[in-house]
Amino acid sequence: MSKAFASQADLADKKITFEQLSAHCWAYTAEGDPNSGVIIGDRFIMVSDATATPAMARDLIARIRTVSDKPIKYVLLTHYHAVRVLGASAYFAEGAQEIIASQGTLELIIERGKEDMQSEMERFPRLFRNAETVPGLTWPTLVIGGGNPVQGEVPGRLTVDLGGVQVQIWHPGPGHTRGDTIAWVAQEKVLFSGDLVEYEAGVYTGDAHLEEWPATLEALRALNAEAIVPGRGEAMKGSAQVNRALDYTKRWVETLYRCAREAAQANMDLRSAMAHTRKAMDPVFGHVFIYEHCLPFDVSRAYDEARGIKNPRIWTAERDKEMWASLQA
Image 1 (cartoon, rainbow, N blue to C red):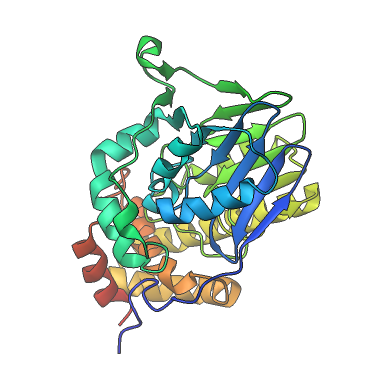
Image 2 (cartoon, rainbow, N blue to C red):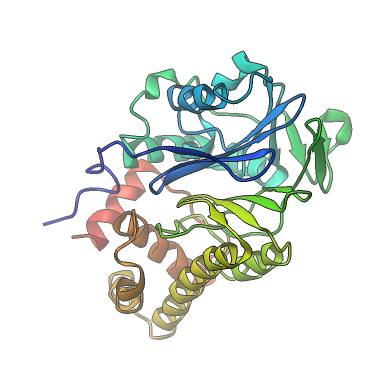
């Protein structure tokens, strides 16, 4: 008997926490659901990760309005996945003027945004409960790296002044996707990592670059953050806890990719690679939120990369279900 597909059986609402981490930085977390970050300046507000739907975004906006009436001028897309970006339209009524993303994220939206939208809506029915409020794909208005500044594209890094606090935004390297972007509030040592870092939740790697990801994590560690809002899991406070989240993510990525390389070297098929990976992953990570959802996608991608497929194959709703029937029966 197959397990319920992806997160289709996960229909219970999660407890949402909106907590202040520093003078200007807040975390919006929900028991392993996708997180968002909020940076509140004296003049403007920035939101990091827009949520899955405008209806969900309005809940975050309502919580922001309990502490500030400043306009939400900037929305950062840490990467292209639908659960992170499709709520962006709700912020325009709150003063949003710029949707910021990396060049890599823009390219991925162009290349596979439509397919990802359909795929994720079928994987996460609870998160997309109000899918009719989504007007379509979310397109960045300000692109960092590798473009024409005359057309609103900003090479390298971008520093945004919110009034009383500056936010540094850049792409630290491939990992969860090839376009991952972080927000760093240096004066308060708070890092908004997106899905480059997770804690006590499944680390989704279906579109990842696993070989490079550990080095990207070490680049983030070098910031010496005192607080982090990971992509999933609770906000971590204090350098020891920040490093704990980095170590958790690195262990997942390195264990997964090592098992995939072993499977490829032994000429295992994908189903055998899944069984081989479970021997190493289940005892360590089997208890965490969305583990069973993530693992088949993760093994599929890791096995591809171990066999030399550098650019992740596009997930479609059809490919999702075909893979699931093969690996989660």
